Image (cartoon, rainbow, N blue to C red):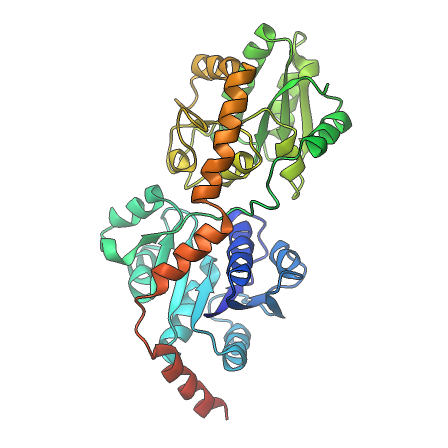
Length: 376
């Protein structure tokens, strides 16, 4: 199949990572993929040498005529079977172009509503396929009255060749951070703000560290509460020296490899939880809040544990339980296999193509003939 991906938003988020991973997965599966991207963004950098044909372009807003012109020119050149969009600013332009030309459009929504109410009501009905990235997110649309058949689920893919166990790389990262190679390392990777549950995690981690002298805590990320979090950790004279703050880095694989376990402690609802599957792909078990779409990212009791959000005592005991070497190593091996079965790029690419198959035959060719007539 031939795909045109449109992702001109400059954001550096899970939606951008999803866009890159899915486009790469389709190329690796033998499909043709063109992409209209804003240059010098994370998406452009991620796809520049992937086999995806990248073209510059962007939408300043949903009515930007230059954005429409760029998409139409690329459609005329690439003749795609499907147009794929990931970002809210481009939903309406892609739906309007697709319907005008008879080319099916697949839209991904990485957040639960709210969109503007009219968009939330109409876009799932007007797009040929409207994908939520978790069952939790899908339910939010059904609760708004969207017919069940109009919202499908396709999970975030993870590149299991990039995110994989590598003991040497993990040891090198620990050494660079001043963490002993025989330490047990609890990690947090993501934004640092109250809704992410970082303050209850700090309390639970420090309590566990006082009982387990081998335990260290590595914080990878930034955010509005990062400075306060770091100050609180440093003020704990008992274990403060075993907290490490690495700041943010777009290349997280080696950080995951340095961990013994990952904490995903959100107290605000999460749509999904990409860091959970990335960590598990690296053979790292996950302790995660039982909230929103997070439970869909792990096998509770097998590749990790689901815990009550914000319950410091429960989190402390779970951290200490994973300080047991045999328990942790078994869960880590299970975690890798769980991701390979459910979230690997080739698995998600295959499922994506399967979910597109019922599209009406001939829609794209009819639209492209009309485009050729108008642009000739």
